[in-house]
Amino acid sequence: MKCNETGVLKKSEVYFSSPSPLAKKIYFYPISAGHFYCDNNYHLIRDNYNSLLITHIIDGTFTYVKDGRHQTARKGDTVILDCYKAHEYYTNDSFESIWVHVSGANSLEIFKEIEALEDNLIKCKDVQHLKKLLFRIFDGMKGEIPTSELNYSLDIYKIFTELLNPQSAKTKGEISYEDSVHKVKEYISDNLNEGITVKSLAELVNMSSSHFSRVFKQQTGFSPYDYILISRLNRAKYLLQTTNMTIASIAYDVGFNSESNFIYFFTENEGISPGKFRKLKF
Image (cartoon, rainbow, N blue to C red; front, side, top):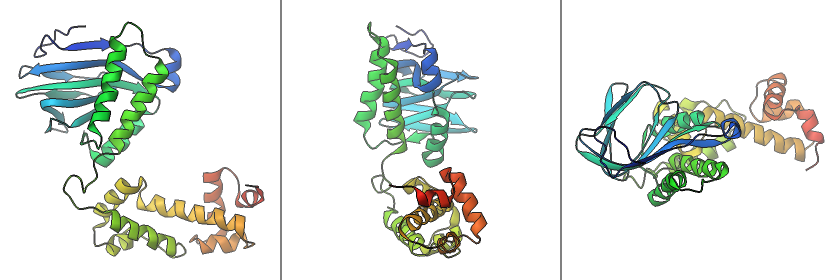
């Protein structure tokens, strides 16, 4: 289907899809997809489009506006934008892109995680795989025989996975923090019964607390605080299953300041009390 938007060249194509009630309930699904060639007359300003935009820049430059800042993506970059909110993007010269608007399932929560880790402009590790997935969705919407909604959902999930696993810092020519994060994880494991703070962990690897927290979450998927709590929980489960230590002793051994706090945290996370967990057979 040809597009007649200002600045969109005639060889561009766009297609639309309407999800079923089932897809709206449990799947990721595409709303529209396009393969665009645009000149410098292209400038889109829109209040909302009830979806996320994922666009991969095949050639040229693509500029989007966020919080008053103009950020430019170039050949090989991928941009993800929250189009549930007002949004604006354009090009000062020209660009070619493959793009899809998606929604459904927990897509907005995944977007927020991507944005927190990488902002909106991402340099994907496997660019060819990302392009293949985007073109597969585009071709499915273009074809006479529609792609199954399950396959659309799987491909969109794979795209999210690519965006959550961008080029490593080392690949981008920056410092690799893998050794530092590994050092911190070992320290946490060896000192679970101590009063570990984010500040003390940051000092261990000579970083500011804010920079360390961002790096740690980027490398592990957890904030330092959450990682400490999960580590304590996992150690407690191991001790419950493999020792005869009292629940109070386990609580203090893994770093909780009281038995009651430990029982509350354990039950909230596992859905059963430590005592009941101990009786489970694995």
